Amino acid sequence: MEVWFIILISLCAYFSIKSLFGLLSSSKKNGSKGKLPPGPRPLPFIGNLLWIPRNAVDLREVINKLSHKYGPILTLTLGSEPLIFITSYSLAQQALVRQGAIFASRPAVLPISVVLSNKRKDIGATPYGPTWRVLRRNLVSEIIHPNKMDAFYPARKRVMETLMSKITQCSKQNEVVHVNDCLHHAVFSLFILMAFGGISDEAVKEVEDIQWELLMNYADFSIFGFFPRLARLLLRSRYKRYINLLKAQDDIFFPLIKARRKLRQLKGKELEYVSYTDSLMDLQVPGEEHKLQDDDILSLCSEFINAGADTTTTMLQWTMAHIVKYPDVQAKIYAEIREVLGEGKEEVKEEDLHKLTYLKAVILEVVRIHPPNTSLVPHAVTEDVEFCGYTIPKGTTVNIVTAIIGRDPKHWENPMEFNPDRLLNGSKPAEEVTDLTAFSMLPFGAGRRMCPGNGLGRLLLEYFIANLVWRFEWKPVDGADVDLSEKEEFLVVMKTKLRAHVTKRVN
Image (tube, rainbow, N blue to C red):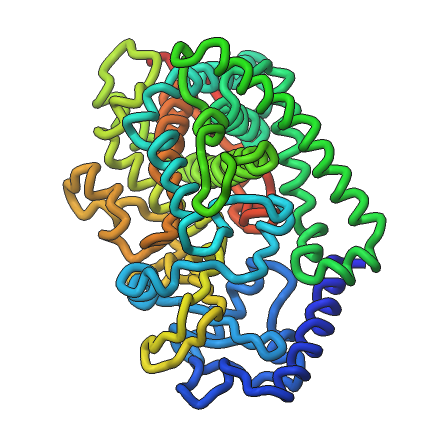
């Protein structure tokens, strides 16, 4: 039985019951203070539930069609609960930046948090408030701040060289490179080392495998976030599999956390660098007597690895797919690197990246067309708010549909055409190309809940892509065209995994 059908039945039951209670009492969301944004007429009890398709890619198309009819802000209803969708860059900016404090919270039930963190602490789904501020500030200031990132350069270089060696071996043997597999292991290894410090290759692989298994089973397990009691009753074997995966994660993570604590006690300030685990061991959340417990450290490290590595891997594969598909783009990237480095340099170093303007434009154009998610993580308003002539009640879920915003023909001529030059307009310096506020897109969000790791993510994209193009020439397998169609896994990924032939360049 498909997971979507089970979710549909569960949601119908939940919101039907909630709607019945809503009819018996005065519902604040249906009060007389104002009207919601327009949308299709809801059915009794289930609302617009039948409008919601089974995956995010199809939902994007549904919302896109509805926005042509109802405008850039619209409402779909689940039972008695309104869901607001925003498809305009200007309205998204108004909500996330100019009225950012009001739109900065999260819905009460967010399956990603319930399922992947098992209701323990995380940053992405924590409601706006003191706990979220402390957790986010720690991540930004202690781990991904530019001043802290230099400490992780040896780990980045180690992972890069391992990746290059693997691809070099494929080029020598004239083997097909399975691009996603190579990138996946490299990027996950890096984020795992940042999370736990120097651990064995075997431990890295164990963490990578359990994290990937949780992500790939998220669709099956998400029902436990929507309607946990009924789902546990009806899907006992699936729930047992979910619990076993969480236990396996505990068995892998807890020894790493304990080993890191012991190492800190032995070496103190002589540690090579402060890992994410180290920073969390000293952290205390407002209102709690004790510092973070190990299960919370596990949850936050898991979030850090999944959010950072899966997003980066997905965007690397999309970027490499366009580079393989468009040889003229690959040639222009290579020529730009050659002009910056000169002759005889084997590696593109991080200090060279700020000069690679065209490379930055290529990556940003890929992110515009293929953001890792069709929408940002859902927002929720902290109070009743008047917005664009409508009333959005407190607690209402608001979805910013970034995939539609980045493809909006009002802002982008031929929006589905891959054209990095559109972002350059002559001789723009690299700093302007990386300034997302200059473009009508929001791939990393904006305002208070903007992705804190977007700077790190873009650094890794540029570092990896520059070296992959500098060291190797990439061609499609047997001259076949590269398929850029999409599908939803945890993120929106390539439907057909990228494969390529590589030839080592002589620089």
